[in-house]
Image (cartoon, rainbow, N blue to C red; front, side, top):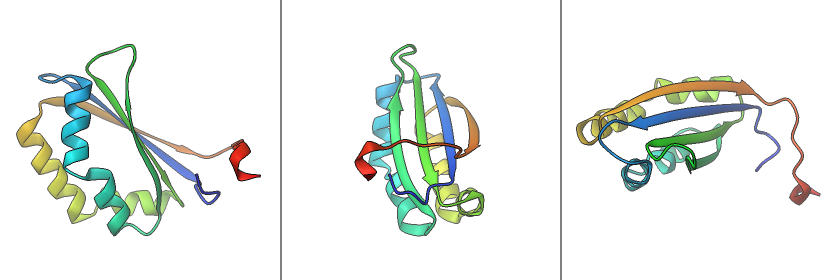
Length: 110
């Protein structure tokens, strides 16, 4: 991860008609994280996580240079198109959580 990540977003997606793996596959094939990286200069990191405790739960973690980069993504037409495309394929409940970075230890950055 780059040291300029100051803001994190966590999107939790719970499948109502699909497993976590199916949701992650649709999300990845739709290039949701890749498109974000292409259009938002403040995007720094993205990862899709499958829950080990709930077979219908996915979390998408993204790192941003700051809150304004995340807000730019929230209002971007590409994101709106993604949401429309995904809602046609999946029935889900979702929630978003955001965090400021406080402390990080990454031995690979030495």
